[in-house]
Amino acid sequence: MKNEKKNISLNYIITSLMVTVFAVVVGLLYDYFFDLNDDVLMKDILSGVYTGNPEGHNIQMLYPISFIISLFYKISSTVDWYGLFLIVCQYLSVTVLIYFGVSLVRGSESTIEEEALKEARDRVVYYFRFMITPALMLIVVAGLFLGHLVIVQYTFTVALMCSAAVVLFAKGWDKTASCIVIIAFLIRSEMTLLMLPFVLLVLFYRYFSLRDNKEELKRTLIVAGAIIIGLLVSKGLNFAGYSSAEWKEFNSFFDNRTQVYDFYQIPDYAENKEFYDSIGLDESEYQLLVNYNFGIDDKINAELMGKIAEYGKELKAKESLFSSIRRVFPNYLYRLRRFNLPIGYEYPMTDSPWNLMTWILYIYAFLLWLFGIRSNHGWRKGIWGAFWRVAILFCGRTLIWMYILVRGRDPIRITHSLYLIEIFVLISLLYLAKKSYKESALVIEKKISFWMVGIILMESVILTPVMSRIIKTECGGRTEYNRAYEELDDYCRSNADSFYFVDVYTSVAYEDTGYTYSEKMFENVDNSLSNQILMGGWACKSPIESKKLVNAFGNSSMEEDILSDKACIVADKDTDMGWLTDYYSYKNTDITIEKVDLVADEFVIYKASR
Image (tube, one colour):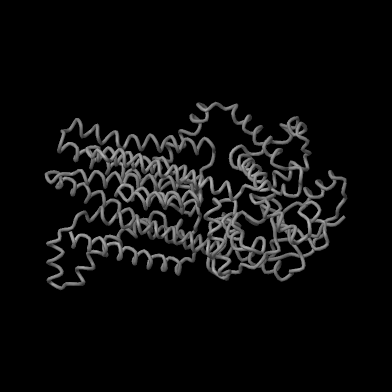
């Protein structure tokens, strides 16, 4: 027992060290990037770049965790704490996943064999045997999701954390796993709820694997209850953090805006003019919705956005649920069976190699349970026992995939996250299957595992250099693409007496190259106050936006502030600014828009005046 505990400790230490080295090497080879401008804005709010002081309300995360991160920026404003937090969460999760994989592959080591190696004092062989398995698993990690480790998005970070919780629940480490789920919920509540059925399914599997233990049902219910209570408490603390009237009004606006832009889209003006007339929205104001610059118009508030969301929902409801499922189901099947080497980080979008890895593990899990149960109860029970275990998971994943496909919300940060947690539910099934094997069935188990692990490693060895090239190209492209934005930021900061209102879609991309604005995490960290603000986006009309405008202009009316002497407008050189003159004309204000400067040969600086 003492030697076994020592081996567990040594496995954990070596795995942690190897993952740390891997993280450093990955950072040196590629740098770490925030995936989207959304992630950059979250960091700016937390760090004080947005308002001048670190803010605990970063809107996208639940209040307790964002408040804690903001405190670190108050301690030191020269560190990218938010980026560091995501990196630590990612690699701690990877450490847990690899350590679990090591225990799964190595199984229970013979202490006699370990002692023989020690007595021979062959330290090279001894430590090599501990290092080889995590090293091979890091190859699997690199081949499967290296891109998501380098180009960091908090949605995928949460998926990694929930996957770590899954394997910890399989091992019976309930307290640690429950804490991880709750922290993940604080980081990205919507994604955690999408992951939660997979997490609870592992508890269900564990109960049926250990159902002879009378205490297991009670233990399972306590764990599930603790998770639910933890999520409710987290939500309650978030509610308290956003309890002011201003934040309540904004949260209502934010929820309605999300429904409009992410799910229902903006109904066409010409085809739905009667509706827009009924809510008092002119075509020039409608254009603000289309180009996402709705912050200019005070009329576009929570109530009006709610009416647009409800109308969009009614239009979409004209297609029945059955018709929607029938429309997306062929795409679902195609994504399951389409195997090809990826050629880009995100586009062209592909589910490979995720789907291939998933199919291999389904077969692996089925075979292990089949032969494990057969050895004790015969073929009939073996086939049924293996079938229902994989069938429940497959049916559950199909329901969740239908949900996201019908809603039309399937970027890779969501789809790859679903594949990731499904893979580790399957790996947890393997662990539970191996625990049920008796001595007489171990020979067939080792043969199945040898071939399946070999196939997975072969796939990973092929994929790792492919993924490495893709990420190198992606990071190089992002670095080059971001130079224009860096030049724009330098320009704005060097003209500190002016204030810049940035067109929303210009802030995302200025050319259709496949790249969008992101930011390196730990390079040239500058958390000083920015004199830029978007004319729309998800933080628009929030109390922190009002605070930023009041600090700059003495009031929070963007419509008035844009016409002030110190205000400038930033837009892509190919943007037609007619939408702005049309809007002010509708407001009975004639304005002139003058080109003031051109930055990085991409961004035009305008001056609007009466």
